[in-house]
Image 1 (cartoon, helix red, strand yellow):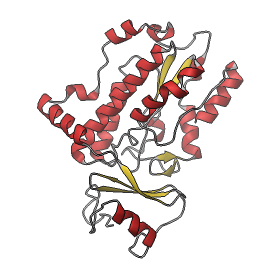
Image 2 (tube, rainbow, N blue to C red; image 1 turned 180 degrees about the vertical axis):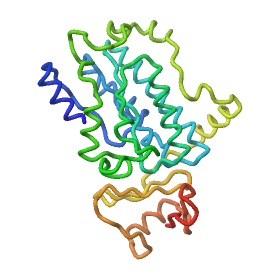
Image 3 (cartoon, rainbow, N blue to C red; image 1 turned 30 degrees about the vertical axis):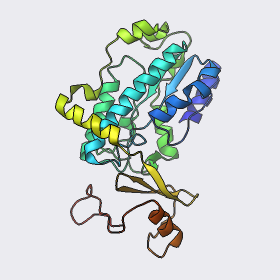
Image 4 (cartoon, helix red, strand yellow; image 1 turned 60 degrees about the vertical axis):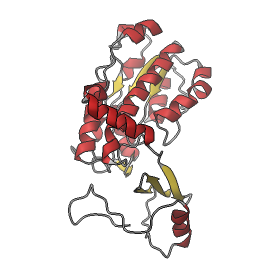
Length: 281
């Protein structure tokens, strides 16, 4: 979608687009890179398009899901403030599916979409074009569990209102954003997050879990798109290729890598699958 948008904006308005995104980045990584890769460009507009999946929502333990959602939303607001600080206009990429979402995380995905719509910023509303009604990609729109294919990218691009980028100001861009709000004005605006309505006792407990959280780390990567990621005992097998892999103890390189990672030998069964459909590793 980003390439299609760049071409459309160049053709329609003569705008130049610099794509400095990093695959797999979460809000924390993006904030760390901002001063180095965004600020020097002195952009008129900055599009912040990140994923709840990369924040850990799809694979973290159930007790940490709300904390992951909170990190995503507050991280986006931090980035919006950073954009305003360099006198640029912030726009947000909306949330999108992940084939590893379940009923609970799908509900949180939609909740975050509703929350972002209250922030008074332009948001690219991708979910209606991509969502199969269960938080998964519509048939024919996904490359792997977390990413769209060419058709999905096309649908994402077509969901963007190009009039937002019209220098003539025909688009419905909030006045505060159009005139590059001061930080004081921005800070005075009420920015609600989904987390703000959580019971305070539950919130304190989840904050403690977040502080104790061990960041997801790769245990194995074959360099071709197949990897295994660990996060507090949870195992995520990610295959970004079109090939099938057989995971077994006979794969010595994989076995050695998992042993070196500290993973306890045994069977791991997904508790997000229906009874009888669990995946055993």
